[in-house]
Amino acid sequence: MKRWPLLSALLVLAAIHAAAILANRLAPYAYDEQNRDCVYAPPSRVHWDGTRLVVYGLRQEAGGGYREDPTRRYPLRFLVRGRLVGVDPPGTLFFLGTDGFGRDVFSRVLYGGRISLMTGLLAAALAVGIGWMLGTAAGFFGGWADEVLMRGSELFLALPWLYLLLAVRAFLPLYIGPVQAFLLLVGIIGGVGWVRPARLVRGVALSARERPFVLAARGFGAGPAYLLRRHIVPFTLPVALTQASVLIPQYILAEVTLSFLGLGVGEPVPTWGNMLAEARRFDALTLHPWLLAPGLAAVPVLLGYLVLSDTFAAGGSQQKY
Image (cartoon, rainbow, N blue to C red):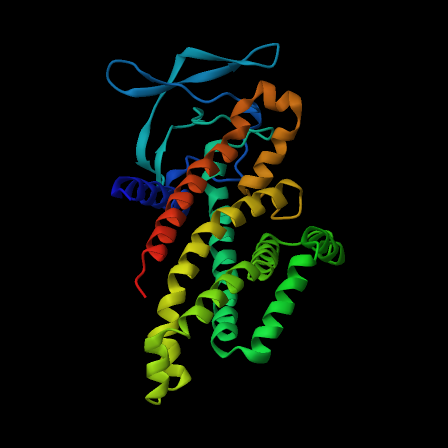
């Protein structure tokens, strides 16, 4: 496999995750800052006036639209007030327009990426961690441990987890804080996702424990701890990494879907899911297409992790036993 797709994917993922982490420096505004004079304002156009970059003031028209006012010019200022770029009031800088409350969509996409990306990472770590431990134990020791894992995984696969999530949410208070909602998402998404990693790791561990060098080490008196550390775990690691790279984008999409349906983190804290909820209205979507920006931001993340999963899978298939 060529190196440039992997390097490109790593650079894209690193840039997106870094942008989310540094949202309070890169975003021109706070995620909950409202400008009621600029509701559904279009993306700002940056102009060059011969000496500097400027944005024009906005003038609201009678029909509800906006028109640039060239007589009011506001220069872009860099590294001011703790942020990378901004303009002096009363000027406004909306790279991706505003929503129905006059909040900057670009800033909210950056802040919302924190929760959406972190949900995918933590939920995948939880699912792969549980599946790796259970699958390794079941495949290596066999017997009742293997039977319990297989029957338990079949039970988990049979349960309708969306309805279970709805039931859990129904028992909770009507309003829960963003931290509690975030932890609930991570716990449920990651807690139910261990089945596939566990079954795959179990198969690898079953194969590895019958390898001649493992049998030879066992014959020389090697204990379970040594066999697991020295022989079994190295075999299962590529499978775990591949599963993590596959599950992270799936769980990001799960968070987006659940927040879109109102089952995740709620307003005013942004996530890519609850930001897309405003685009459900046909009039808002057709008149203000920039509301789809959170969905577009997820596309390079999903493609980047897809390239990583292909790389890990190819590496695991070429592993020499």
